[in-house]
Length: 382
Image (cartoon, rainbow, N blue to C red; front, side, top):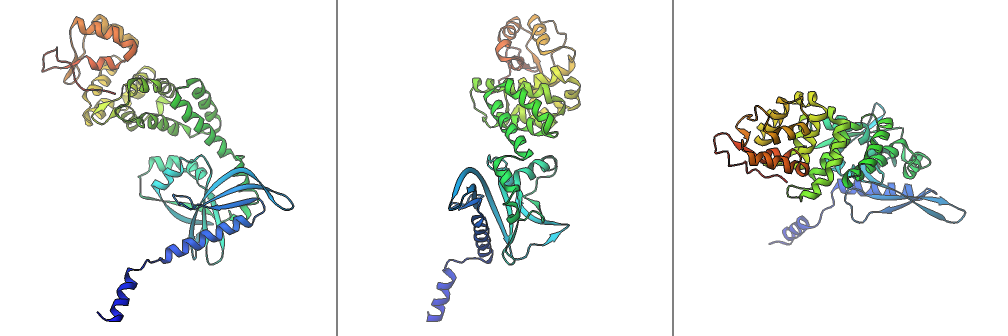
């Protein structure tokens, strides 16, 4: 091996700093210095960069020093040598998963587009952008990346004087909406329906498109428990689910109901309670969702039976059906390949278990029509 070839091989195996990485580092250093020079801000580099590059803390300046105020923002920097403006906006592409991550932040997160050639930078508050675009993002096709348009009039150096300070202090209307939503999430998780109802009332006054988000968060909280969660833990969520259905049931979509109830090859008892509430409070809307067909399409025949059952006796509430099944007074309980076992012991079981299990006890007492009636469905639920 010649000396030249050996050197060439060594060069090929050396660590390489790409042009993109260098540009990003320069942009981050420039933005950090710009913030840190401001008398009302202290900038900190994030040594372990997991989605945010910088942290900035609001400070109260005095003659010789700064008194830190404990009001923080996070900053993600995107650098370029020549950001192009169109219609007064700068288009920045972000991964959809990253935006999902940012939506979980309690601290404000700014996206800063920095031009390393002109040393100019522009900003946008990402949570506010997500709030303004959440319906479009939820209803549109999920793509790998999303374009965020940063207004060219929102220059970072000017924003540090006023707008970004108000964001850090929580003085913008968006901060109120986000705080209420956070409280709604906590109330849902803890089963505090009094707080949840109050928060929903407030959100109705200040956040018109909150219905989709509120329903989705409740479903996410239930799904987040996993498929094997204990019975009593799911019971804690039932009051919140019922509160959401009472208020927002007429805006539920078929997909949301499927997500609420289904757990892979089984179903959630708490989710079924929400479905029961939907048929009690919004029977016409529930029928429009074509739920029997939807649940059969994912092989949840017992839940499909339940939807057929509720639609057959749409004039009866869950309570009425419990009494009727306990008395064995309903003329028809067969829908599709399933029916309630025609047995006095089964009727007694329904009558005694319903107060604790709700309508899920109906599903526990189903039998396949081509099997002996003593063989109840063995499909498990959480």
